[in-house]
Length: 327
Image (tube, rainbow, N blue to C red):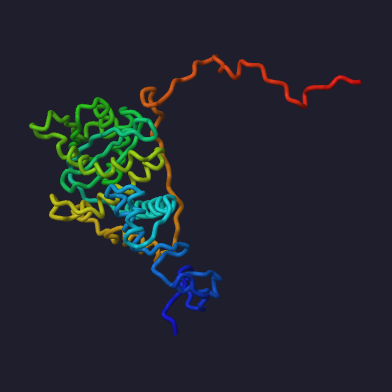
């Protein structure tokens, strides 16, 4: 009796279906599908541990090319760029969706800041807001501009995640925070602007936080589209809050400090959970970051009413339009 079940339907009504490269394949009589007897997800060839290792390396700042080289050296397996990106897309979305079901127990003082990065030749602003007590990253946001509306979106996302309104939000002297926080919380929240690193309160904490994002920034410079940047932003939020211990928190993760009993402890658990559930969710790509400013775009804008040289030229007659004279 073989102690094995179908990777797709869980049935034990299976028979041997030959070998390929030393790997035994099986045929399920119930769902009529073939699967390999190895530590890989259905419809995938790479073992689970290699996939989880690739995800961890990615969010620690390693490029996809370096990940492929590492897998080739350590496991004699060199997947394509698109394959590695598919792993990142699939499991980042699954981890992010699972993390949304938990509400952290955070403090009453939050701190916000923003940094700029070029994505696809355009300047994109990345906003982050964390809780001082737990270091929990409550919200991240992307935008082409730094307006009051974007500041409001950031703090409202953080309030929704925390399930509460903060008593104090500390920011730098960006004017957009003044109206953004006021529109979101009114007089319920005190807005404190940082007066420099030598005076408390200040944004030194979030500046250190942005220092930890150097790996994220290094990888994101190679991204070409805002959609891929958004995917990485969501995956990084899970990695930072749930999988990355902090020395300042006694080697605990921000999620543990915020009393979240998250069942997944690392990217290996994410991949294994996907294997157990046998569910493949669609990719969640939704983005509303406004339009780039004229300073963020490359090239010149075409003036209204001015036709290009090609449009002004008369079209050359096609051969089918030329009539030969009659004899």
